[in-house]
Image 1 (cartoon, helix red, strand yellow):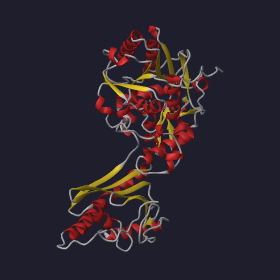
Image 2 (cartoon, one colour; image 1 turned 120 degrees about the vertical axis):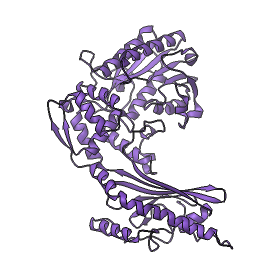
Image 3 (cartoon, rainbow, N blue to C red; image 1 turned 90 degrees about the horizontal axis):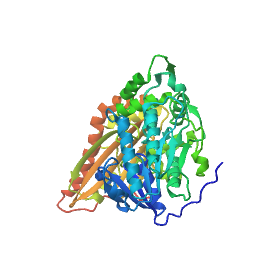
Image 4 (tube, one colour; image 1 turned 45 degrees about the vertical axis):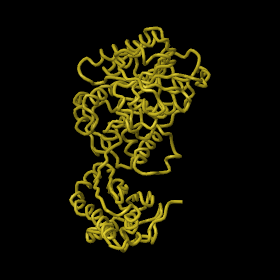
Length: 505
């Protein structure tokens, strides 16, 4: 085992990050900034980075890896190459090599000390898919100009937003029975996104000569079938049945994946065709060379799932895992799993404190403004299934953690927000949130019902109850606004009702 090089204290280390709006790049920038690196991001469309929390802390260079890079490379110590053209039209593999060559020559001309590149696993002696062969070819081209190149090769990256993980998520959650080709028995060595980021940070910041190819994988070597089974178990889904057929080619599989998942079909096609290649660590190990101790597959799947939920609701996950698992504003729109919503808004002349005073009295004896019979039937049905139903009622004042009928208060900010998490028996997770925004002397109220289905049954459930939502949800919001408006129209303004809520400790 090689001794790990000394860690660079990152005194005035200037780093150019390409692909900063992508899945890995958006997660790499924050830890580099935390190490006091000066980060410059190359972006064809800088507006894509506007929503990133770290945007004010980085320099943006508008440009493309295939264009003039003199200005972007000026003064850079380490350049990170995280771009690809997978499935983007005819000739994309040649375009990837051309872009890599242009990048490498610009780095050499600017005196860049090191290029760090994230490629793909796969034995060079195998007949690789177009995707994996292109990943390897790009690495060779980047190393062709004499600049030191650290090429990290990884297989399936586990994390919400990763294309490979999202394909796994949607396939397993939507299909209780899957007709699968022989590639489900191909072995792979998944690695958590946090460990990939740690390896990239180490490759950027370590001193000494460390150029070369490093293969990265987690501690578990599994088949794709085993990975699907572990995902189902971790996500609380019933065991998935796989029916293997020999005639389902990777190309046919990619069409099927395109129908079932929201991953773009050209990208899905290239990824599926790569599944015929075994992607396991076989040579120089990155985790050994850079002293990273990767987490197991079960833990990485669990954290990815919990991070997705954490995008909706504040949980104890803040203390449970690194930020790289969390969704970011620059992630693809199809990442994060299926989220079904019913969003309604309205305005009232009453101020936020008045509106919140009425909102905090909802449920219990007062009820939910409309659809009383429907609420009672839903409560009875929940009790028959072993849930709490409506029998718990509510306390006179609310605080975070309190039960409220078959909900529980998950977030409460007086005058601003009330969020409830469903504890009724459901094939998924549900939230009901009201956000209050002052508009002049009045208030805009946004009511959001959100449901994350669990498996196919969860999706069927949402379709079945959707007609009832058309009666219930407008009634809740309309009743709340009408009550607040009635007070606002009184000639002699009374104060808001005694608040039925108290802030969290």
